[in-house]
Length: 311
Image (spheres, rainbow, N blue to C red):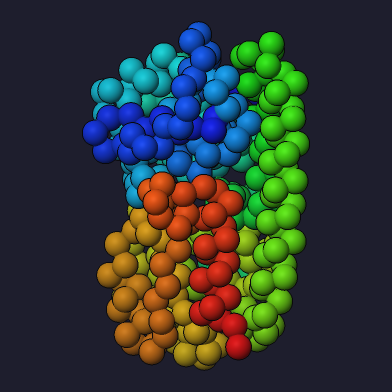
């Protein structure tokens, strides 16, 4: 079956938020780990109290640069399964995952992936068939909720393997959540309809909005860090080219994740007279914030994008 990959989120260690744990999990329930907070939330919607769920990355952590602790290694070694985005997103975690030998479900393996050739400005990026590699695969698939709906089938199947006595419960929750994702998709289509075609230009801190752009008819005009990871550093020439592109196309805003340092993006917005808009693209907010679930995160981001780019 799947090889790489509750209503409550259990944030462990001092930097984790205890309030993310909701409800008491059943004694003897399988131990499940999710890498990011939004993956944890999605798993939680299906697993409920029938699993013991831990989220590895603290709120606000950058998935590309997360550094695990010895306590994290113990948590992973004891898990029945780890759900990760995959496709290189959790690159800093990969050595530890291979060392512990824990079963990892990489959710990106079960959806069509966009390839990225090393530059933006793709008018109509195409999904890669995975047998022909035209560039790196973009791991940021969760910005398209229709792809997250595909994740739910994988999550349901894996949890059913671990706790088959709850198969009907997992199936019902997964189906209900897919309906919520379908409603979210319809809402996004309606909202982005308020942005004219000429203004549907996205510039972000790194190449993180490709799937959102592909699904909803936007163009990725560029990124401050010209790559799929926040670990890259732009050259002075690349920043100058981005500034020229923003000016030439009339881009209205630069979107920056709450998990990254906005300093370079602030420089770009000063040089171009555009606005800087923060988005929750890699981590949920705390429970009292505006993006405490995946669904809320997407609603918040879409609202912010439409407000910045709409007429």
